[in-house]
Image (cartoon, rainbow, N blue to C red; front, side, top):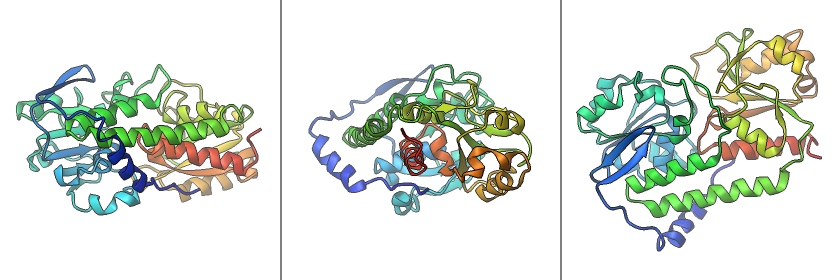
Length: 336
């Protein structure tokens, strides 16, 4: 399966259509974010994105010239953002040091995960940045997760795209480009609605599992819990996730997965190579050669879907993930 390109010509048209409706931002702007009040004194000019989704949202809003750096990337940048992304310094592919971020003289931090700038942030804490006069913003999709200051945590309620749309709206208002934010939200909602109308409730007999990675390819696997982005995709399609856990990414043994005998296995693709099963080629080799796993219905019938790992987390790619999985089920003749 391939990842669809976002139609940016339509986004541009949306900017023109909606711009008359969007109000300019009045500063100082104060936003409630992840349990804190964040005050923005003026539109940022040197923002740093910590987390691929945060960076890609800012790039989609046309803010490359107001970004001083990015870090924490899992997958290649969306192809349609490559030219703008090349203008922004990549501080690090993985987690940068606090000093490396500060060296870029940021005036705003946008973070995808609480683990990055939360109370025990791997880069630093929000207070450390605020002491330097730098406000920080964390994705509302991650604020809805508990116990995630050190790990992926637990999500009690099913993710909805409303949290992502909130993030786009708030970031666009922070930068005083609300018209662009509303255009992007409108477009994503239209794509989401199109898939809902086409497939909703047609996959009730389908059992899905989403394999992100594993510390060791033959060991326990990080698979999607029931309430995250993958759970959202599964719910819209009307299928069932074989993993009934509220953890975002629980480690589950293959014996347990085999006993559930999923109809379709969705494997994550990414550039990252820090874990034993990051590489989708490694995943496929294991699935097709392990004496037990290779006998699962999904493997024997070739129902293995490759999906950008970023789409498995709450990101602007999640709608693309929904479209990709829906198209695969249609191709396999599983929508009734």
